[in-house]
Image (cartoon, rainbow over all chains, first blue to last red; front, side):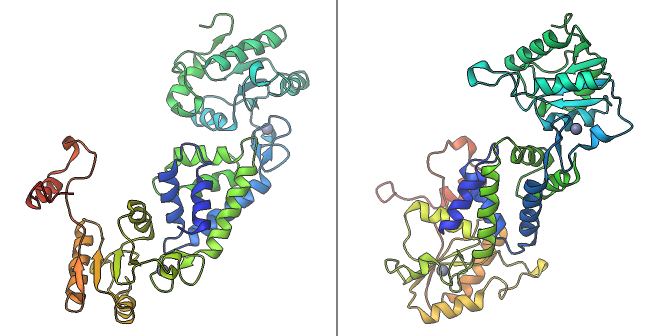
Length: 199
Length: 199
Ligand SMILES: [Zn+2]
Ligand SMILES: [Zn+2]
C-alpha cells in the first residue's frame, strides 16, 4: 500500500466507530472511478471547518456569530434547554416538541477530569438567564451518572430564580441522547417534571 | 442545523455503508473541541486525491507512474494475479502467500452494464503478458457470478499462451461449520484431498 494511502487509512480512524477495516474500505472508495464526489466532500469539509464556529450566545454550531435558533423571531425566548452537545439539538428539533432556546455545555461536569462549571459555560448561561426573561430551564443532559450530576448542579444553581425541569422518564437509562428516536424524545419532553420531583 | 452542516451530513453518505445517522455522528465529531485531527484528515485526503493515480502497468493505486510492486526487484515477474480492485491486493499481500505481479480490472465484465473487456483493461493485460515473460496467471476475481464469468473469459483468452489458475475454493480458516453457506460447503467437499496432501 502506498505511503499516502496508509496515512489516509490511519486518518479515517479518527472518525467515531471507524476501525482499520472500515478505514480501508473508505480509503479505497475515495479512489473509485469517479472521484468527483470525493472532491466535493473535501470541499464541503474544508468549508465546514473554516466556517462553522460556536454561536456566541448558546454555543451551538453556527456559520454566523449567532445561530439560526437564537436569531429566529418565532422561538419562545422564555424557555432554555440545556444539552451536552450540538448533536443533541438536532434530535430535540426533530421531535418538534420544543420551540425554545438552547444552551450547549459541550461536555458534563467532571471534577476528576478538570471539567469545571466554567468550562461547561455556566457563567455564560447565568448571564443569558439574567438578560433574557427566561422562566424555565429544561435540563436535557444524558441519563448517565455525569449527566445526572450536572443536572443536579444546574438545578441547585438556578432553581431559586427559574423553574428547572428535566425531560420525563421515557429516556432509556444510561444512554447517550444521540441514539434517541424523535418519538421517544417528544414523549419525554411533553412529560417533563420539576427536578425536585424527578426520579 | 446550519446549511453547511447539512451538506456535510449529505456528503459523508457517499462513503460505503454510511447512512444518515452515522453521517450525523461523523459531522458532529468533526467539530469537537480539538479540530486539529479534522484538519490533518482534510490535508491527507486532499493530498491523496491529488497524488494517488493508477499504476500505468498494473492499474493498482500508486503515487508514482508505476507502483511499488511493479518496480520492486524482488517480485517474481513470471506470475501475474488478476484482481477486481486495488483493495484485493492488500488482502493478498497480507496473506504473504504471493510474490508476483498484479493486474487490477477495476470491475468485472458485465455486458448489461456496458462493462466490456476493454473497460476492464484486457488489451493492456494482453500487452503485459507479451512484454513480460509471464508463465502463470492466477485469476483471483470474486466467487460471485460476474467474477466467475470474468475468470472464464480470461481463461479463454489466455490459456493457449500461459498457465491460467484460480485460487482453490473451500472452507475459510478458523471458522465454525455453522456459518458456511451450502455453495462453499459443496465446493469444499468436491475439492477434498487426501489428508496427507492437505495444507
Ligand atoms: Zn445560538
Ligand atoms: Zn503496478
